[in-house]
Length: 436
Picture 1: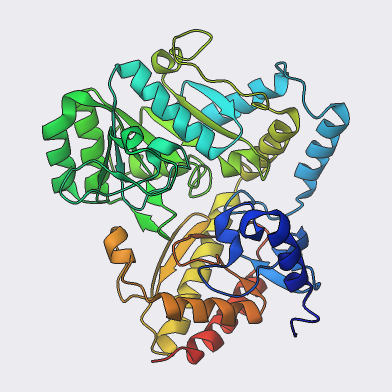
Picture 2: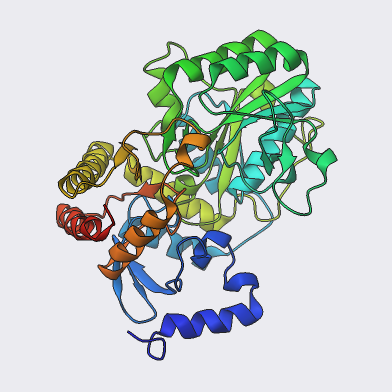
């Protein structure tokens, strides 16, 4: 298709005139991989169609929320009914209570939960709550973990061990991140040094149990255990960012997976989003009652939102959670994801392409590296140019993966074995085109 007939090109040119970069979230711009973004016209099940009516097998699923696939009948019914009743009230509804109860039943480390509208909002509110509950200022985060675009969390690692971070975005004054320590993911030595030097001043440690914005990198069990131990020892709160992994890698979220390996493991505060909203703007943060009661209107930590607990969004999220609770759903989803990852690994091996992959539940990631990386520095060793070639080769064959090297992928309940087989066959052709 030429640029004269590709409607995506025309839409991108039009978008650039009125929207910065032509997109409303940077990764959509295809800047990392080159080419023109696909403007989606509609979606159903495991597929979406672009402006040219070209169909793609969708492995981003709105970056995670579409765990049931697009347009699930039960979700559509719930959303339609809710929309007829009203879009927004600015007053409480019973459905907010129902969704909160559903979330708490799935993630028992939380005794209370506050609904908000985005993962960024949930993450920044959890940080404020940790600081308010402890009376401390410092926050520990890890390089390569993304917790939304709140100022205090847009930081990169300092120049030495356990040093304070530096802003990674214009518009973030250095003094805003002066209390944020950035450490290397899965580095226990750095973690222990940070707490030895700053433990009495640390309000909280925020981490992704599986980092999904440096592709797919698991926290090791030993690292996770030490995070929990040191937070407990020093009176800091362990904040688990499960915006991406929540109800996606397991029904009980990633913390339920780690609890199988670490007796009694649970975080103090959990941040959730994506799946619990089913594709609508909805997120949440929650924890033990004593911590959550520090929030207004009960306590001194202020947080509010006009659209928090939106009645249409809560209907979407509630219907989604009820569907994924059905017997056998996660077993089937896990098997599909494993089938995809094993198929991709075999296809790469057959073509002699260095490749490593991992998955949990309905989330997966792969690297053009012989071994799975453990931290951001190792992730950066992936060959970006070869990934870009792979991305476009798959796109040309009707397979849509994340248009960036550092993003995880997602399988839905709507993906069939035939979809996965088609994807693996396309990948084998794509791998054969990569330079050896």
